[in-house]
Length: 402
Image (cartoon, rainbow, N blue to C red; front, side, top):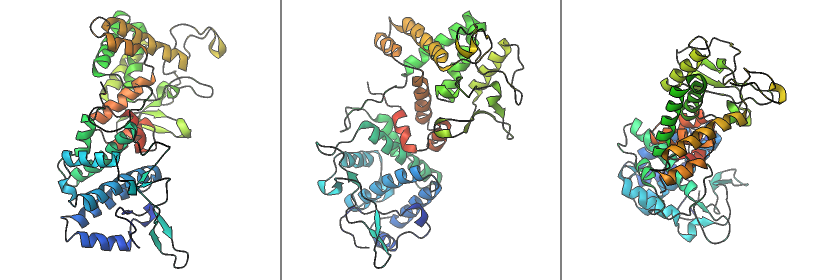
């Protein structure tokens, strides 16, 4: 495998992890004489990749970031992985934000190619770690940077688990990221997460509504608790053609843990989400006001969120206890946001105005952002959110941009 330029693909495809790449193995062995723990840290990176080998999208995203990091520490800084602290991670990010021209390709090329004469796998001489997309030079967006730090944070958590590293410089940098200390272009993320003060006011508003009208707003309490802690899409908890969410979507797992089951989600996938204590408390309170047992029974056919007034049109016209649809659920959330904005307008005028523009998806965004900020495992957050790719979590990363 002839090396054409300084940065090379260090990690093979998932199906080749057990054997690796002979020439790269030789190179790493040589590096081990110059850089502390080069071989061992490389081995740990293989182990981490192996844990993700059966999720193709995750594997490729993680491999790309590990490849960049190891090339940079070995061939640019000539340091070991153990020496990567917050300051070094900042230098690495600055390097990735403004890479040398010789490491930028006009289009994406595969890592490896197969020699037609020998059938041997070799480095693609056209491969480069960075790709120029569009005119105007190489530019990274905030979402790209967040994805990079999120993926590397997962790797450093793994290193802590195997007692190789004590700190997580990627997570530290991610928490401290803002538009003034990073050379990236700012991008619109669409629906944003609620700020801490907005979320505190919203939860206080919901509690006030429950106290004022419990028969009406125990449902509101469960809805907001569910959206924040389990972060489902609105289509997963609302009635739609061919689907009605039921109380029996809450199930007791054989382990004794209560879970919320989503039988069909985006892309046709199903998933189950463990229910934390606040969800179970809100569920029991809501069911009590409906005159039901504290917890659902298997195959219970009662709708998850029932109407308080009979439907006025469509298939639910005249029906009282039918499941709320998407627009009805959106209306409840928007109404709470408006009431909350009114309550906080005098003391927090900017946050109040911003809150009026948020949507139900902002609660999903808030729940995921807070879960990541609380250092919940990224794989767990990804699965609970119904995503198939860790990189997708970048848009939910909790970063204060103000």
